[in-house]
Amino acid sequence: MNVTIPYKRRVLAWLDDLTDAARACGAVNTLFLQQGRLVGENTDAPGFWADLTHRLPQVAAWTHPRAVLLGAGGAARAVAWALSRQGWTVYVVARRLDQARELVQAFRVRGLASLFAYPWESRTDPAAPWFREPGPVLLVNATPVGMAPHVAASPWPEDGPWPQEAAVYDLVYNPRETRLLQAARRAGLPAVDGLGMLVFQAAFAFARWTQVDPARVLPAMAKAVGLSLPHEVA
Ligand SMILES: NC(=O)c1ccc[n+]([C@@H]2O[C@H](COP(=O)([O-])OP(=O)(O)OC[C@H]3O[C@@H](n4cnc5c(N)ncnc54)[C@H](OP(=O)(O)O)[C@@H]3O)[C@@H](O)[C@H]2O)c1
Image (cartoon, rainbow, N blue to C red; front, side, top):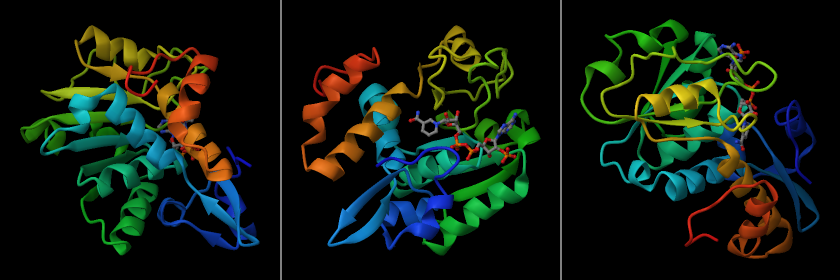
């Protein structure tokens, strides 16, 4: 079965074991049975990375990749895990600085040291490293800001400022075109919504339960939600 908001952390107490990703993220979205034991998995993390590599391949291939991660909740943890394991530097920006610090500390304990906590107000501070230091930056929204019904809200000011070379990934998929994505596209930045992550995490969960190759189910899942995936996936 799948587990979603608000049970992704609460379910931990009921499980016999966790996969590495679930343990690191401290959140579970998929349960499966292994030799009679109930195991918790997190497919949001590989789902995010798979979607990034398919829909923003030029970003996934950056040589000195950095991300500004907005939010420090369950989904942010999955994104932080996915990116930091791929060698990314991740600036975790949250309205509760203690929550961002807790995330960073939890990852440090696991040997992932390239994460740093910042307060919410710093996201547009010209002194912040994503403005000050050269190199491309992926801006990831892992907050619900902009999600229906509050579609007029955005976690980033409409008219920027944007890092000098930037791309935007909004985990929100309802609506697909959030204010954040609209603003990013107006500024000429590559930008994608969270629908691809939703489809990939579902395909990876389905594969866990059935041992079916995720590539076999992706086209039907993508079609069901009106998502066009790059040709090589479909
Ligand atoms: N595309 C996908 O497949 C996928 C998968 C998972 C989640 N998501 C989406 O990702 C979003 C976050 O989900 P989640 O499970 O991580 O939720 P969560 O655990 O509740 O975390 C939300 C984070 O956003 C922060 N936040 C909430 N409202 C805010 C505001 N007005 N200003 C600044 N920060 C704010 C929260 O801070 P506080 O703790 O202080 O409230 C927290 O850090 C949701 O929109 C969800 O639909 C998408």
